Length: 443
Image (cartoon, rainbow, N blue to C red; front, side):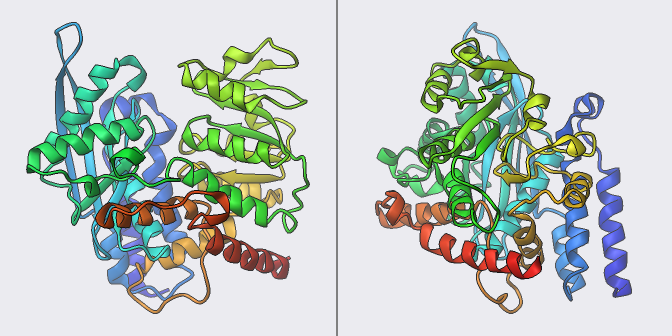
């Protein structure tokens, strides 16, 4: 390895290991606290596969901008409460930065930075004209009323309005936020700049300039890949599926797989998990979530029992879908996973240590082979030659929709979301087929 590159890699790792976290996050020792370290490890691994200019890695070592703010809002009882918030713009070499805003009690600066770095690579590998960004507010959104959430969303935009903008940084929904949150934020930004500016935010309601299909884009991208790779991966019709995480992506993935004839045998959310050997009623589960209830509310009905989140991960199933948060599969539980196939919807749900364990046990992760290319070519930020052939990533549907969302905002177009006409489907099909051939040749 180039001595200069080796020095940069070691410096980058040292920086990750000694980066200060918020004291409360450090004390709580939450899984999210190590996300940046894991992201750095993957960068180091990827750098070994390419003739990487040390200057490129040096750029990726630090974010372009990291801004922290205090958001103080009036609560419904008249009191004032403050929340920490962040916005990170990691790199804008390819264009305006792009990335979601999450409301979560475990959000911290390192997590936001890591997710922004991931967004830089994803946008580069998908050849989208965006750089990477991410934002977050340290809050438990379920503890706030709708009016309090609106005040918090608007306060976030007031704090970061000088950073975001259609040609500078474009936010989107993430964990704990949704299209309503984005509508509040877009309205606040429009008020600040004095004109309607729908292109400042993606993931808005369709009526306010959002794209059809954006709500299920992440799940649909993974579904297409799973569907077109089924034979190569040995996935039979009527497969038993366990889904960890029943938010937006998890719910849509469950519905798509169930409609395709598969059995959703287990699902979980932040409050617990349920299991039904004969299959769960996805419509009933989604109805419970719409009414603010946990998936555990259906426990006790015919054939449905409540289980723990750990039991779901270790359940006897054909497919395990990870659609929750980061680092949920780690060194401590990877050896207990029975599913022969894992589909990743969340950002970084498997730690590097768990990767090694799963690989040794021959557990298939469709994004594993693409992930290697994802990081390789994401690292070079498309500054060099185009990589040969199409590149596959399980979130391709999401970013294809994001790109179309931006165009729709600028041109005021409506994007067709019927499955057979989905803008991502054609490229996903060709990529999945190529990747299947790659798996076949590798085996």
